[in-house]
Length: 478
Ligand code: SAM
Ligand code: SF4
Image (cartoon, rainbow, N blue to C red; front, top):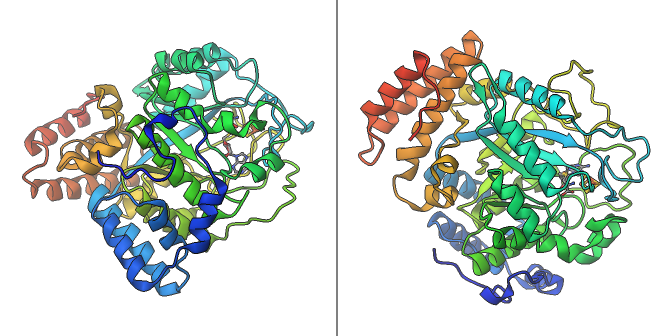
């Protein structure tokens, strides 16, 4: 991998804080963005090269609507050329919402006495996983508040429990984590349980702004959080996810913060983030931020396109925080993973709770509460290829996003065939008749397209495996 370290992004900066707000603001305040420079930067990204902070700032500072359109078009083109039409599906599963922190934006904050606290018992956890399997989910992200009860051992225990649940043809094949930062030993314990990605969002990369939102608990320590994924790497977890909570501070600065974090991980560990998330603040129980850094839909679409171009190899996650219309639009700018059938209330996948969200029981409001099947149906209706693939992780092909991106033919040999095989399982086991019909049409269309590429998987073998799935075999992958 060829990376371009920038100021401070040096290998000896392991475990050291790497954010200099003045440096990031300087890029925003001094970078000139004109037609030529914007086009040159888009062309560099389409040439599959990572952008520097300066180049990212050129995109950020483009304000001419025509240029903004070109940036979005560039992101669309990059997605088309590099990743094709696959979208990986997952669901979040909240395990416990006890929390000793006081994050102003979060319904679970310790000072929110109206929050209804709950930690799933083993039996309840199993019930939730069974319900998710019954919907067809194969990939989960487990979410926890920060609390002494949620120790590394406890997290590892819940991960193992989830992997152990098999209902009918259902099983969870990849468990990711979103939890508080751990010490190196703690990360080791969690790694041993077989997690996929460890995801931690910095929330805001601006240390002063960070202080104003994090009013109590361990999460007040900006630097401890900033270096969390360094400790994960030191513990051998090389599959990490970063993110910023948009709406806490200036979005332009946060985009540079994410790129800076990427630089740091690349320089120190020779592996960038597996995923970048860009959650936007949503309403939460008694939410009162006291600031206004609202990111409009238009700015949101722009920042997603800019992130896609800035770090072309990374996975990009778009969640049900955003409504269906915006998700539909933004997916085209290079999003690779979305959640479907999302429920945030603890225990709500298995229990019949009100359709209406109760914000005292949930972390925040979601705006896309469609079922997994509604999402799959929309995706196949728009010629996307929904995927539940977990093959790379299970075959030990770590750094898969980078391989998809950089190894010629990788997508055609592995990702597309595995997407088709996992979609076929879903269609056979869980989809209603009309989704099933549309889904198989999309598989056939993708098979025809694959057939035209010499470097693709052995197409006859893929056809045979699809037939084997049709006749009841499961978990076939390349
Ligand atoms: N307790 C862990 C932590 O803070 O790292 C887990 C994180 S939380 C359960 C997952 C993420 O949700 C947070 O990192 C934050 O970015 C996001 N979040 C919190 N409140 C939110 C809100 N009101 N709207 C949208 N996202 C929110
Ligand atoms: Fe707790 Fe995480 Fe919510 Fe902060 S964001 S209050 S740490 S659950």
